[in-house]
Amino acid sequence: MKKTIIVCYAEGHCDQVAYALQEYYAKKADEVSLLLINEKQYTSFNTRALKDTLYRFSMRNWPSINKFCGYISYQYNEKLKNKKSKNAKEAQQEIPGEKPEKEESFKKLKTRYRKMDNILLRFNPDVVVCTTPVSLEKALIARERLGSSTQIVVPITDYCTNRGLINNGVDKFIVQNAGIKQTLLAFGIKEENIEIIGTPIVSSVLEKFDKKAVFDELGIVNRDLPVVVIASGRCGSSRIIDGFKDLAPYSNEMNIIIFANKSQNVHSFVKSYVKASKVQQNIYILDSISNMAKIYSIADVLVTSPTASLTYEASVRGIPCVLLKPANLIEEGNFTYLSTNGFAFIGEKTTHLVPAVLALIKKQNPDGTPLKVKTPSEFNAQAYGDFILSVIPADSAEKKAKSQARRKAAVEKAIKDEPVDAVAEKDTEKKKKTKSKK
Image (cartoon, rainbow, N blue to C red; front, side, top):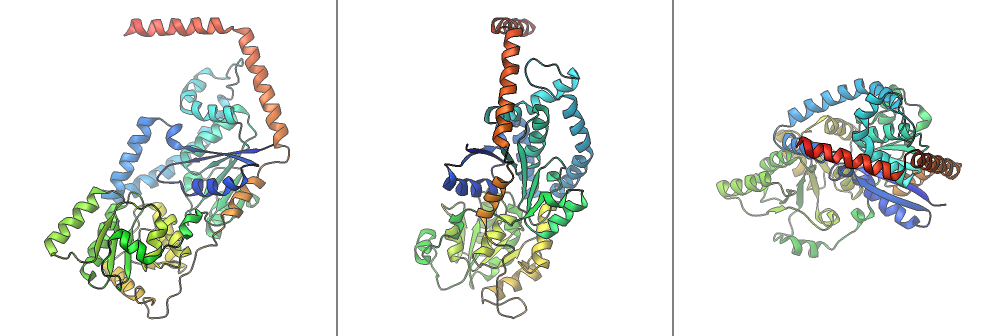
């Protein structure tokens, strides 16, 4: 019997694991049915849109506010953990024909978590992989309410711990390094529920392209000069601007590619800077590219905010990274881990950034020693995917069959107790009342 795995992710923020697993499980299509579900599909559209807008605005224009909100969110999540678990138990029903223990609690929860309930009921997955705090919260409550045997796995791919992902209801954690494991242990997570594997990335990142072809595609003229790429997280345009301001005066010594990610702030600033300083040579703005491996094929140095995906991909390709100033709590943790363990170089201030980049383009460390790029962990998407499969209990198929039979019996009983015509009649009466109120 094929195993069913659902990966809940947030497009643009926590999608790295989802795409890596999709690529790996495609090779096991006879054994595994994989479903990727974007967070937007089971959360309120308006709430999600507002959250994304505020996140982008604060990351780009006011990182300190983003950091403060993250801290408050962590504290709030900690206080709510026990309360959410209690509410889920109070509302533990949703099998047709049974009454909730507390009708009021059930009403409060049912609209917020109904979509995740429906996902678990429809697909009856063996494993749900939750990459965000929102998906984890909804999956835990839905599983408890439905009495499901689904295993919940949480991957932590940053170099530090996102406290919003810590919950004793999680069956297994997959973490990037031993430091995160120690943090989870301090929060009371059992050691046997934590596995250190590393970071999964899609294999296309490792693809090598001909430098000349990439130079032609990007229109780079001075091809003998080293290439410095300035990039950031998907919303970190303020950090890109900071890095560009520091390195632009040295554009006669290097090609500078600014990966703007369609940010108007970056475009307008670079254009105004070039116009005012009359420095036009060797500066290129790039919004998107078909494959980031093309950039990695020509880059000599990556100047980036401390995001896990970019730094890991670059280090796997042997490209040294210089870290810009972190913009939130997660980036702060990544910055500390990468810099203190020698996986990246500090560039949060001009006095750090410029000397580091000038040394690295000469294949030297900032202290003058020969450059050797260290990788935070081995590239091992297969181990990631296989571990998730190993989480599934041997009697999973039997439990799923019993669960389906129990739900089917409950549905049949509900239909027998209240025929479909009676339900339809009630719905019609509700619609009439709503229209009369309007």
